[in-house]
Every structure is written in structure tokens, then in C-alpha cells.
Length: 310
Image: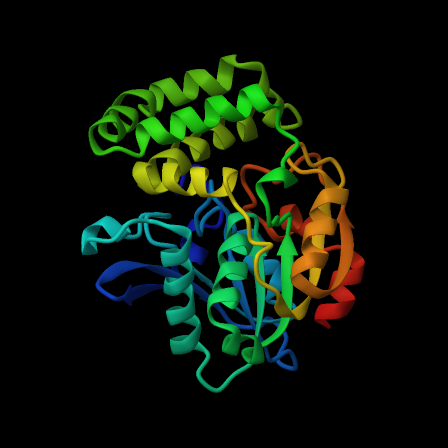
């Protein structure tokens, strides 16, 4: 990890152990870089992610307050729900997050910033625990979504994704997937040869291209396969438009997002939340693979959102 992540030692100094309901993981806790900024920020990563992937964003957000970034069960190397006899459902993820918020922010207000799947889980948490809305001073979506039809993925491709999810969420196929399909050499070959994967890194130098691929190897292998597949299916079948939340939403969209239909996302968010405000981030796609530095993370926080956080 030290070879592919430039701020590894610095990041390790901010990582603490996390133990909730018998599940062991990690939590990044970074104090505000400005003494007069006392806001508490809870940052939640997305589906194909880890603390390492979001470190640069967390560091950038310390300009506005203290930042906490926890693992989700089955992600980033944290124990999965299977360890305690539970399944990695969206509701169970929401319950886990509610426990974390209740323990961490007993007497404090918190700004929740959820990226993609992290936003989905936070939305479900507030729907299941509406009393927690009183703790939230700002709820911010980073390329988040609320329903399966927010995607603009072709139907045939979506069927393939669902078939993969249904197949490899099972124990024995998951073992095969991890040891064969996710073998480091197979991942490296996939990113070096396939057009879509190469496009993901086309703007990088030769050294950064190598670092990006090695980081993808880490990301694919640090997350528990069955949890990853169950959450994939949860996103492809999602409908969070069934219950309203008594909060406005501040949504950051990527101007070249390859996954989501912006007008549809807005329509659905207006169904759930009391108000909707959008900020457009100038990014080449839904989210870059590695967000290792503050400079790389800066486009995630548009000018209007910075003003709001200040």
C-alpha cells in the first residue's frame, strides 16, 4: 500500500479501530485544519471504495470541520454481517449506521455527506430512524441516487450485472470469484486491456496509471465478495421514494456522470426531501478511481457547497 498510496503513513496516524455489535473495522478521524471550524462531518464512502480511496476528500473537508469516515460491514476490510449471522441487506446497513451515529454524536449535530451507496444507506437510515433528522444540520449527496431508474445503464447490460450479482452472492461461487476472477493478475490484465477500464485511466501518466491499477487490485480484494454482490443488487433494485424525510437535500452531481440521469435523480429526490439544491462538479466521470490528495478531491466540492459548509 505504501508504494501506491502517497500519504499512507500520514493517513495511518488518523485511523482508529472500530467495533460495533461484534464487527471489527476501522474509522478515519481527522481534526479540523482550522481552529474556528467546529462542524462535525460524517463522510460515507460508496460501493467500490475504502477509507484509502476517500482519504483526499476527507482531508479537503477538514477545512470545514472535524471529519469521521467509518467502514461499512464487509467493506474496506471490516468484518461482514455474515460473521454475526446476519445478511448484508440495505436495512441492516442502515441500522448499523444509525448505531454509529447514536454512539458517535450523542450530544452533537452532524453534517452527513454520503457518496453514491453511502448516500443510499444514509437515506434509508433517516427513513427508518426519523428521530435522527434532529441531529443532522446538513444532508449532502455526492453523486447519490434514490431509485433504480435513476440509472441510465442499458437494459441488457443491467440484466448481466444482476445475473452476476445473483450468482456470486452465494458462498461457493463467491470463493471462486475472489480466488480466480479477482486474482491480482486477472485484475491487472482487465484494466490494461479492456477499453472501458483503459478509459478510466487515460488521463494519467505512466507511473500514475500503474499506481491506479494497483489501487484497483486493492479495492477489488479488500471488500467481501458476497456483501459487494448483495449491495450491487440492492442498488439495481432500489426504491427509497417510499417515505419522506424532513430535511432538504444538497446534491452534488458530476457533469459527465456516465451512470445517472440528472433530471430523473432530481425528480426522485424532490419526492423524498423537503427541498432540493444542486451543485455541479466538473469531473471527467462519476468518480475517479483514486482520490489520494486534497488537490484531486477539490472538484468534488463545488464553490456553492463550499460556501454552504462555511
